[in-house]
Length: 115
Image (cartoon, rainbow, N blue to C red):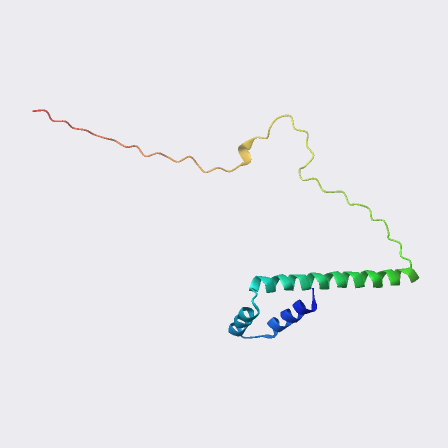
């Protein structure tokens, strides 16, 4: 990021009033998404610098004291299903179903009277 973009971002963030922020954006001819983009760039650059500093300090510290990483034994995963030899599909009797709905009997009586 350039010095101008850093100054723009710090100026925008120093303004507390939302109306003044909006006026500031109009005056410089930029938008809120652009400010958000600059923030993401600044944060990414700061993260890269922090990682680089940590790596340098780690390499300086490890040169005087060499550490060996102990090998870890990998734990066996627990099986998701019990190990059972199956010769046919499981019975679905253990699944609880809703009882069958009783249908009402409807009696329809039609009376036709002929003259």
